[in-house]
Length: 150
Image 1: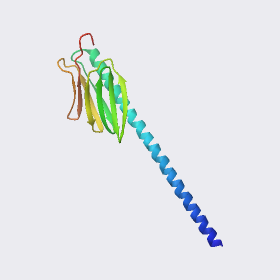
Image 2 (image 1 turned 180 degrees about the horizontal axis):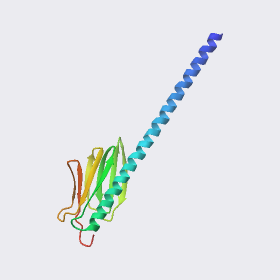
Image 3 (image 1 turned 180 degrees about the vertical axis):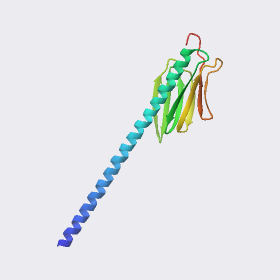
Image 4 (image 1 turned 120 degrees about the horizontal axis):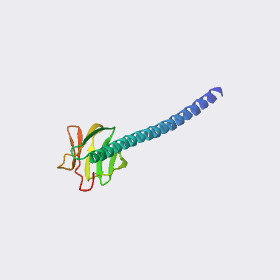
């Protein structure tokens, strides 16, 4: 009788431990995903705000102005410039985490599927071109405001 009771307690204790381990693993996984999502959104927000600020500073500085900011993201990402906004999209698994910052100046340009990492973003007003490009690990954003802006 004692042996049977001991075995029953061991089986019950084992089942309880498996249940606790499963629940703990699930909670930790959910918590880790939430932390990563918060980190990636924070990085995207910092990048979006820094680029929008640099664009506005260059436009207000006039032709010949240049401003460099550094952005860092730990996942693949997209940069999209639209009229009056800078959009940074972090490509995380099957999710797309998006942060948009308003900007007094903007033009239509996209840089897609940028690898994770740190990038100097050089924003300039050379006076004869408006584009966005990635070259040698640097992002170049050239503005050419229309009449009445800047």
